[in-house]
Image 1: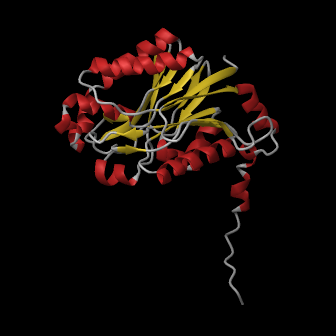
Image 2: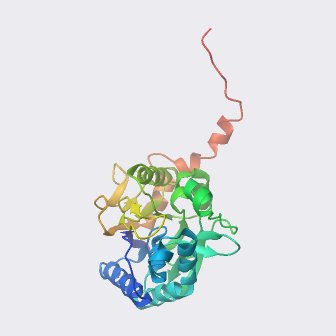
Image 3: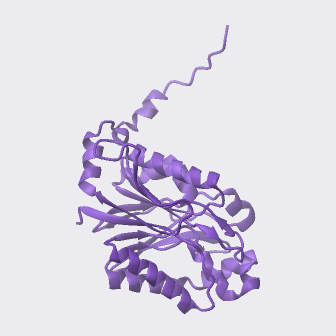
Length: 299
């Protein structure tokens, strides 16, 4: 098992492609760059796969149902590209999420690859308003997955999922050490919600969270025309960690990789003997809430 691990979070822009080969070449460049910097785990953003809508032409990319179906159509080829790159470079990759039709409506799925191929996938659990009301993207039916790999036990909380503490808590309770939080947010407020959620999850679960957002404009692609954020990697603000909990972060709306090297032993030590013990003390909340909340009003 790997004890020290270099993580890479992508601030990833969407591009127009006239052929699938163009997409494959872009992903290869990104993976080669991160692997060349020593990264062992690479995290791409939520809905980064939407750039594949360009392969259907301008009308398809501008039409919601057309774009979702076009992107989903390439899922097998996308998986093959990522699996080949993970094997070639000996890295683990959380591919950019995108729509996958498992029934009448799509889920938002991110797939994890390792040097030996596909490890598994995580579907988004809680839909945002635009996913519910405009895209009609549905929650995954398989629940949460914890991926036990040679580089550590990993979990995925896609964008809005990172804002709901019980999801990450369930993963931490089965030993997840590193949470991967790919995101897509149109505004700075949306980005801040995922950032604050991710930092809070690192605090509560005394773990590392890798936040990889989409960035930049893609006016040709419906639903992801404007994308805002910065890539970052967070840890618990505790002994032997940065005081602000930020291990690394990139420039705002600046495309590229952000890297941090973390120690799994350090995560374990913090969970066992940190200045605070949030992970251990979590269960005390239920005890403290066993008595109903008292409503106090001025007399």
